[in-house]
Length: 310
Image (cartoon, rainbow, N blue to C red; front, side, top):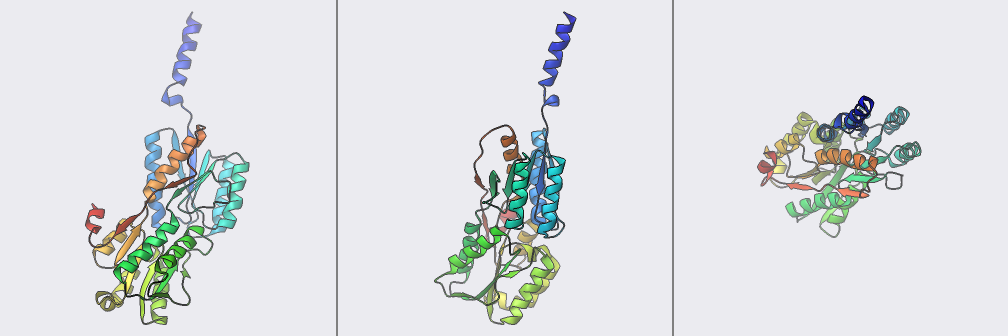
C-alpha cells in the first residue's frame, strides 16, 4: 500500500509545473549593436518569464557580419537548442544555416528579416513591402511637389531591406520625386556610417530634397545624427529638405519630438520577440502555426509623437 501511495505521489509531482518540460530557444539578431534588436530581446525575455517553461537565449554577431551569424547558429545546432528565431542578415548564407538546423531536428522561425526559400517554419515581423510603401507615402504626403531623394539601406544581402527600398520606389513612382544616382547606399547596420552616408549624399547633391533611411541606423547614433540635422536645419525648417526615417524606438521618438525628423514609420520589435517565444513553444507542442505573422506598423509625425511616447 505504501509503495502505491509513493508511486501516486511521484506521478502527481511530475504533473506539476516544476516537472513540466522546459525549452531553450535561441534568438539570433543580425547585429547586437543595433538597438532595434535590444527591444526584440526584451520582448523575448519578458514572454519567456511569463511562460515559465521557456528560456530565451539572445546571441548574435556584435556587428552586421553574416559569416559570424552563421557560425553562431552552427554553435546552437551543436548545443542542441530546442528552437531558433533568426533575423536573416544574408539570405543565401542563412538559408544554408536554417536548413542545417532543420536537418538536425531543430525548428527554425525567422523574425524581422526572412529567408522564404529556406526550411524555416514561420516568419514573424513586418510586411516589408508595405513598410517601404508607407515610408514613400509619408514623404509624398509631406512634400507632394517632389524633388530629388535618396535611400539609405543596411546590408545588401538582406531581403527585408530590399523589399523596403522597392516599396519606397513604388510609392513614389509616377510622382515628381526622382531618385538620385548612387541610391541606395548600404551602411551594413553601422550607425556612424549611415550618418556619414547621409552627409555624403547631401554634399554630392546640394539640392537633394529628401533622404529616406529604411532602417533607424542614423538615429541610433544620436549625436552624429543631430549634428547632421543641425547643419541642414535651415533647409529643413524652410521645407526644402525632408527626413522620413524607419523605426520608432524611444530615442527616435524623442528626436522627432525635438524637431530632428519630419516623420517616422515604426515596426514592433518587442512584439516580434514575444511572438517568437509563443510560436516556437507552439511548434514544440505539435501545434500548427501560421507561416506568416505580421506585427503591423506605426506612422508617427509631430502630431502624434507625444501619444507614442506615453
